[in-house]
Image 1: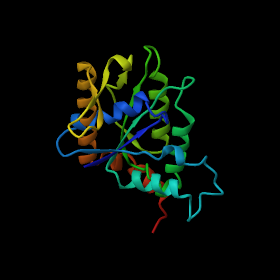
Image 2: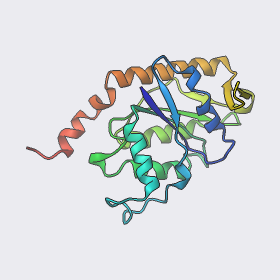
Image 3: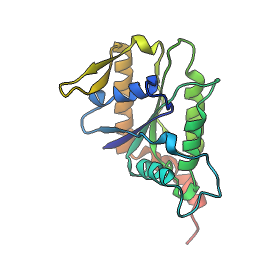
Length: 206
């Protein structure tokens, strides 16, 4: 089971990117998590560019989402909502609706923040936007990593590569619940079942 992880932050040392990097060792058996690294290359959405030969970064994004069995999206909260770069990527991925890479895709959403009170609006808005794109968003308990610097640690592995480890037991437990729920939703084709009424409406009658 291949899962694509997308961070809504472009910052190199982003808490949300580090959170996603900490997930693979916590994933259930049979799940592989791959981090998408090209969000900053995706241009602003322009319908004039949304043609058969669309920009290569857009094609790469759409293909990566379409070929994944499911998604994990971790986002910071900017000004009470999700960052523009993430909303822009979702806009590209959602079009055209009948061939949307997000259509029926099972998704888990997460947020990491250095503070205590931020993040809930981002989770709410991200879930609403994905729902309107006809993705299937796995419900809570949400992975809402507040005071993130105190709950993550960067360590070097045997090859000298730096990896991130979640040190907070409660967050590790929430990650386990969410990833297991995502795996189950994909196996049960929850996304496909959720969009069945929509497909009967948007697909041309034979």
